[in-house]
Length: 375
Image 1: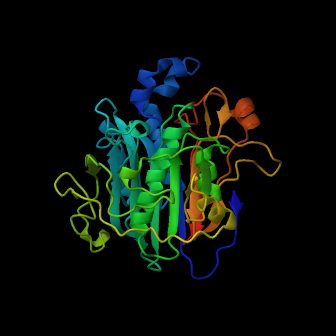
Image 2 (image 1 turned 60 degrees about the horizontal axis):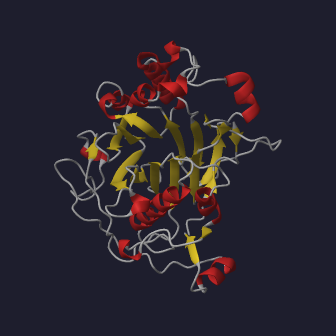
Image 3 (image 1 turned 30 degrees about the vertical axis):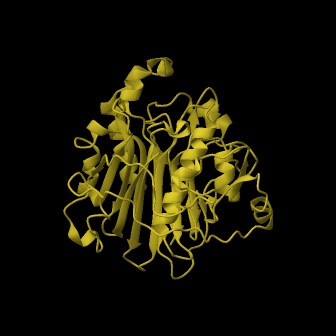
């Protein structure tokens, strides 16, 4: 466990991020698990390992991907008995049964706002996939500081990084809209980004800019290259969010019907101010933006990756196996202090000691990320 001292005046926030592997996907793609022990793939076994992981992490926030919709009531709602509230957003295609879920401890946070993000946009080829995200704006009860956390699962197809780049541009614009006029917002962006550390997506998040060969999104969508909305959001949203929040009004801080979408109270339009006045701190970025033919994507969140992608001996770390052991799961933070993180295994450790996952000890085909931050 990597650790740093906690400065005075900050509240510790522990976050667990995990792609938990939907059972339907195991059954839909059995060839991917032909070398596994069949007993390790049974949901009844995996769910208990997952729940042990959730509770032992003692996380204040749990961000999950590949949560199966019909497992919400019998399994994931058990978290409510342990002090959590949460929400689930299914992928938007009718043939998809999984999505993203986000849970937080009611005794630690007030909910200010919850928004769902749909990357599917009708008529736009680069946005024709059903991937989704959830964004929550939370206020810490100890020091009243605000945290915006985004949880997402980007497209898997290794060859379609351009689609993932378009998806992350939308997510960044939505984060910016929710952050609003706050000058130094605490932000976490977590999830399965299906991107290796050298990909355009991770370079954009880490460096704050990426020079694309052509425009990523059409102008009429209203999202600028600096990953902000030109005006009020024009994004299509089918409002398929399923709210799982308890009827605990104390845990909902002055929220109106537009701030907590549900089946009964669905916000019909995105609210938010334009964030077009972004100041580019990098001279290099400024020079790109002055070039008319430039297609520079940028943001001003100043993200830092919780994980370094390599250990202290420059050995690659890994979170999953996709023809080889690689890292595709991330936790990016901004305006927070990294206090500690649970280390990831190196590729060699995965090959020689962990082996195929899921297994007796690992309930998913992804390894979890766990870190504590100072807010």
